[in-house]
Length: 340
Image 1: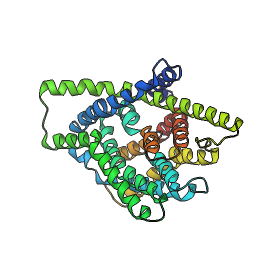
Image 2: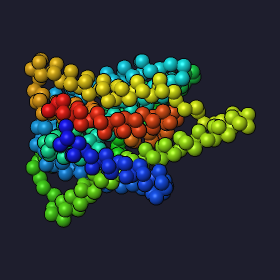
Image 3: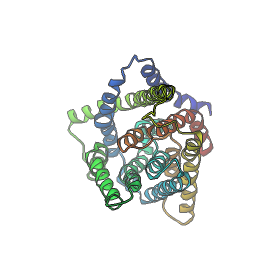
Image 4: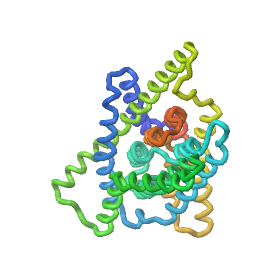
């Protein structure tokens, strides 16, 4: 267990550094979107492109990995939506709760961490999971979130419009395109010109530290905004006026989703993988270990931005992301030790 902690510690230390910098306002909160843009549109696509181009095409088109990961993601989404909806949580909040339970932080955290632990051969299965979550899981949850618009044409056009918005988001997101380009380069066995390859390598090398630092900063910003909203609500209550800020989500709406993300999701991937192997599907034990560890990662931090954009309870989503990130410092090394 100690060797795993020694590998994972720097990754969580960078997250803690970003959290501390933003919480102490050493890093201005207005600068965080710029960091996010650099990682999402420049560094991370270059890292995925490099891994994709250097991975054998067979690993990038592994249907068994896609099947196991896809079934587990859809099962988590369906289960969380069904079992968490109540008088406080409608379709909108339920759908984004399901997304935060099924969508791990693979791009910002998982790729550099698992490559450091398992080697470059871990990149292929991870790229498959990223592509599925970006295209299918996110689009499905956004469409489900629009089912709250009952009455008139909203119920009919809401999910359809949300699906179009989700598709538009995928098309303007550089990550799927970088994955596709990497697959094409791998299939054709082409190499980019030297100066271009070195430029991509420099941006790719920056992805890991900046992405981890940005995760911490985003979590700190969410915590600070939640505290400010809480203070505004308290002032409104003292003055006898109604606050526009929704009350903080109770633990009963947060802890079950945290448990699903860190316990149910990886165990479900492992069980489905074992079933696929028993049925004779060509799923290797190494690929199964990779996707189980991907499922054991904390929730993706960008779900918070999506929840805010679509009017869901972003405070609840941010708390789930924060709790899963903190808990993963202990749970992830344990998962690695068990699988090894």
